[in-house]
Length: 325
Ligand code: F6P
Image (cartoon, rainbow, N blue to C red; front, side, top):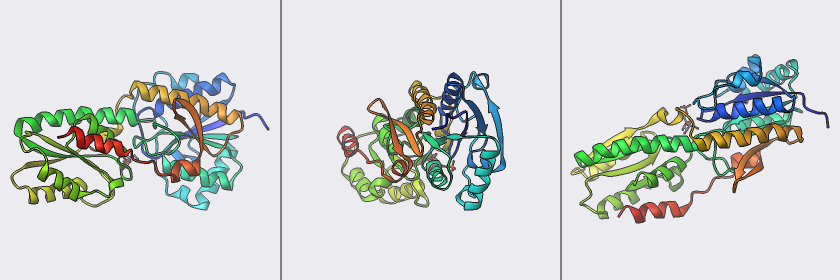
């Protein structure tokens, strides 16, 4: 096995708080092991265009507490094509890169898996997404910060809901995954949760509103954005139609969920997997995501990390039902 001397590092897909802490950990660990790091800007797009620069221990000073990603990020259409991947590979070779650390979510790892099957370039991935929807890690970098941002916002909404006797439909992020809605629903005392995994069960919500306690002055329904057009607004419309006596409002939390200072949990998670990524490349790992399962570093092939669905814990839904009576 040839000893890796130079690695490339990039973030890709949606930004997530804690990505900078992961970048810092990778760069500093590489320095510790005398490996050079090339930062690649704007994910696969930047790789194709050769947007690369050397990084040293100093270049990641004072970023552990910052949200977003200093490397910038993008969702690349070009990398989905064979020509795009060829251009990217040529750039990596030109810059003497012998291995890659990719920080991102399922789109990032799908790209990495295909790339890894076409070219002899070891790639390891760090789970960076607020959605927490990757198989092979208990938590993804950014999830803890995002859910804390959400409960902070919903606590504020609850003040208005309580003061005006209102029902709020609150939409949180998660196009394909209800994990943000599920956990924040419990933590903010939501009366109901609607997530893509349960096929946005509107009838169950209507039953709940019909048969639930009538004397509650405020009600919060947490909805994961999902892919259905209209999302929370459509649910709000149906609720208003069926329960015209409720003073109903819709609130979309949007991208505030992706920004801000990473929580302690996210910084520590990012630091742990960041160190493990460089050590993994040194040890000859490739095509694997590095996560933490039961508090231990765990390696999961990219294809499993993306394809295996993260199961919804049915107990969580039951907890909401029990606690919201
Ligand atoms: O994957 C992270 C995420 O924030 C999802 O929760 C959301 O559905 C999506 O990205 C939004 O992406 P964009 O910012 O590109 O619209």
